[in-house]
Length: 495
Image (cartoon, rainbow, N blue to C red; front, side, top):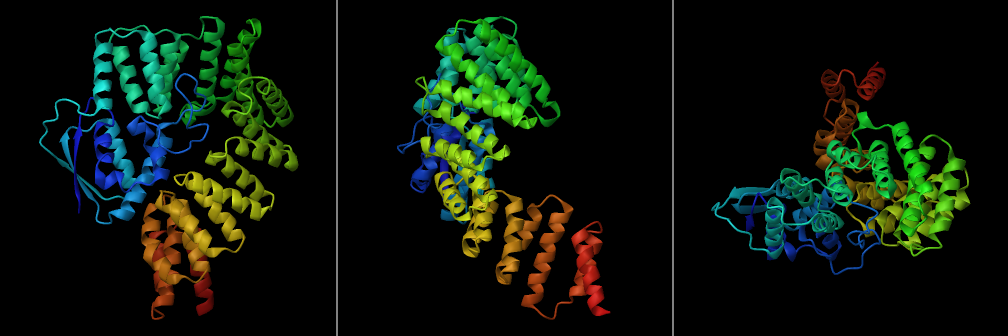
């Protein structure tokens, strides 16, 4: 098992991770497709062409990456390293890992990489990497209140542009502990950082600071609060009607302001947010009208053909689909994908639509593009596998389900077992059914996986007593309908 020594400081998020990925045993094994997944760690742009989303710059960012999305990419890196180091890697830690480092290494392990974290000399007193040193300097300046709010907000925006909400939240906490009273720009950047880390309560508190101040800042705060209630709060706190009230209040403010470029921009995306709610409420015609109007406005601005327009186009395509306008839906979804051809989710949405409308060959091509562009998306692999299965391409389906299962989709593992069993690939079933069953949460799914494993075992060994094994399964899973059904069928055959 190879050993890597890393230097880390608990005060500096991802300091250990940066040290790890810089090691030759790691950096030489990570392909170009993985470089974008490490932006949150390296704080640098990879030397590859980026999608419009990944190419966003600080201060002009529309789409932000959540903690979960970043972890998704790190899990994929873990999967790739696991293929290179089957026996795993020993990591000797000189210093103490930060919370972000623990999340980093946990994600690699979720991808299948075996890691042994061992304490080193515990002597790492000062950061050695330039990015680590810069973070420490920024922290000290904030603690001494020697950094102005504009500079702090710019640094938070820079970190968030790379997807590093861990470091952004740590700086935001330091701001709160150091006596600052953040203005609207800094409060917004801090709130975004907390929200992306899943702390929607603190994000809401920060947005509310400027909710009643009037002007465009109040409209922005209300829009952000609306999105918290529409998408980002825990399930129990989601409230579309509260989101709708905030959006309408913000829209009233914007309508009364001078129609500057900033106000027009905020108005377009306010209405895009309200279209989301209309879509959920089944008011598709109204949603389509708002999106069409917004796209037309953006078409007359510097955002024509940019990320901002693709967001509305993709949303409009989904609305057209719900309206029963398949030609318009396909045209609009394709337009979004072609404007940002390196953004995998647009190809995935197009593939899903085409599959639903029985255009399987075109769906297969779009799904293939999605999983190629972002192999960390389990949903893209699952969709590719499902379409392949519909087309009778068993090997491709097995490949897709395997990729999704390896990256953590337990349901993909169950779909894989079903496909292998239906294809009489019983030896393959025997290799994986126990691991699949262990990953499934529901009793019904787990019992089905064990049932498929029992069937495969009976083909490998005809002497196995199926009936006795079914009785044992029923005793283990007395509430499983599928086990009961198979046991009744076995009884009928015996009688």
